[in-house]
Amino acid sequence: MADFSLTFLGSGTSVGVPVIGCDCAVCSSENPRNKRFRSSVVVRAGDKTLLVDSGPDLRMQALREGLREIDAVIYTHAHLDHVAGFDELRAFCWRKREPLPLHATAGCMETLKNMYGWAFSPEKLIEGYVRPDARLIDGPFFYGDLKVTPLPVEHAAVETVGFRFDFPGARTLAYISDVKVIPAQTMELISGIDVLVVDALRTATHPTHFSLAESLAAIEAAGAKEAWLTHLTHEFDYETLDGQLPTGVRVAWDGLRISL
Image (cartoon, rainbow, N blue to C red; front, side, top):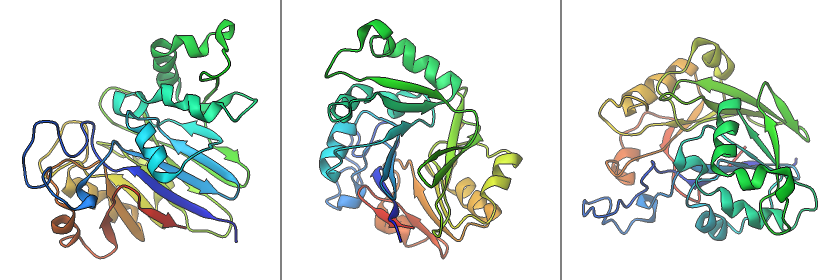
C-alpha cells in the first residue's frame, strides 16, 4: 500500500519552547521532546507531499526532516506563527518549473497577499523567489488520491480551518492545530475519526485556544480512536503530561511520524 503519513515539524505554541528568557524546568529540560518549534506538519500520501502552514521555524524544520520538495502548502489561518516562514518557500520553488500551489481561505489569502505582495504580483515572478499559485479553499480538494476537506473552527477573530485527510485503504486523519470552539457541522465531519491531532495549549482556560480539559472533551465527543495533542506551551513537561492522559491520547513531539 502507498505511504500515508503525518510528520510533526513543530508541536509548540506561538513563542515556541524553550521560551526566550525562561528558566523553568521545561525550558531547561534536556529531553528533546520538550523542544517545540511552532506548530506545523507534513502529510505524505503516495507520491504527494503537502505542507500544512509555513511558520517562522520552517527552515530548521525542513533541514531536520530532510524535506526537499513539496507539492503544495495548505494554510490553517493567518496568524504569524503559521505564515511567517513564507519566504522559506523559495527553496521549494527552485526545483519546480510551475508555481507552488498555496491553498488558503479568502481571509488568509488576503493577509498573505498584503504581507507578501511582491510574491503575488504578476509582474514580479522572479526566478529563484517564491512563485505562488493562489487557490482559495471553498470545499474539499484532491492531490492524487488524497482527499483534503477543510474543517472550519472558531479561533480568535481570524478565519481558521483544520483539515481532514482521507486516503484509500488507510486510517482517517484530522488536524486541528488552533481552536477554541469546534462547531457542530465540523464535529460531524470528524465523528469517529481514526486519528485526531488537536490543540491543547495549557491547563488554564484561554480565550482563543483549547485548554487541556477542553481538548480531551472534544476528543471524547468526536469519538476519535487515537488522538495527539499539539500547540503546547512550556507549561507541559512531555513525560509528566503523557503519563496522565487517557488511553488512546498521546502528546505529540517534533519529528514524530504517524503512519496511517
